[in-house]
Image 1 (cartoon, one colour):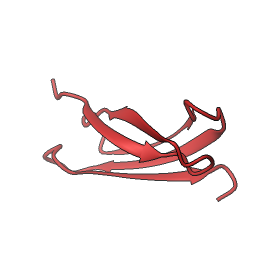
Image 2 (cartoon, rainbow, N blue to C red):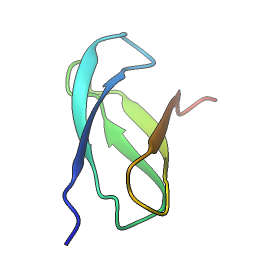
Image 3 (cartoon, rainbow, N blue to C red):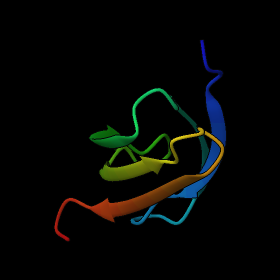
Length: 64
């Protein structure tokens, strides 16, 4: 089992940093999660390399 990858993102609404966990067993992910600070919905686009070492996280508002 692959370990989860911890990364920091910044809320596209309030700009506050927050730590999220990425499951590297899913190479392409798209989901919505509320900001831990301002509670607005953040859209996540996540890509994980085949070896599970490199992670790209894009965050957007629900209006983008």
